Length: 246
Image (tube, rainbow, N blue to C red):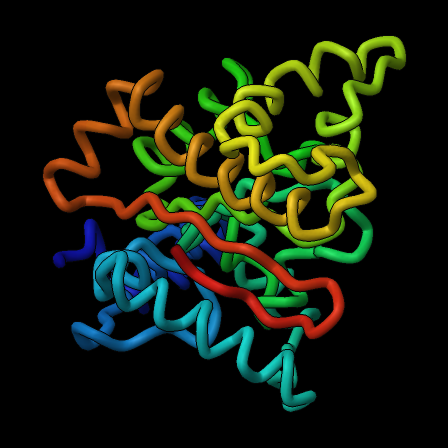
């Protein structure tokens, strides 16, 4: 990739006030090269996204969760990352996760600033706004992996099982009800008191949300068909900290 001017000349022009500091940062990011199949320490350039595949990014999140579970997270340099990503963002993945306070995606996947987009909503469902956000994340900003992340003991799932009604929450829960109906009736309790039933609904909800993304976003479906992105589901266990993948 060629410069519009040499870095030394650009630095001199910046010092003289002819070129802005952001322009210098843009040139530096444009000049960055990354070996294929390797990750950047900080996601501060387009080259960082281009060097890796959706599967490699998924592997990275899996390893990050392993570190989280074993209590051996990376020593993230947040201050450095803030400065390095201030002029632009190049995330690797987008996580659609529940707003549950026990399931913060960046922490449980041991990722730093600038590594992932995180769309959080009760019950990890998608609507037009979330779908639009996902399309921005992948088509515009270059994110290559979309993860629908459910979790155990989910309050929104329990509410759907119990047919709870509360203001605007009623409408949100209605979007989860198809997952409840999809579980065959085995004659056992189908309320939030049945832990096994709740977890079956949680998994079904994740799988349905993944399919909804494909069905309602031609943009993302086309990208997945071309192999540009990967759309997967996963479940976080609030008791163990472990993420299981579908």
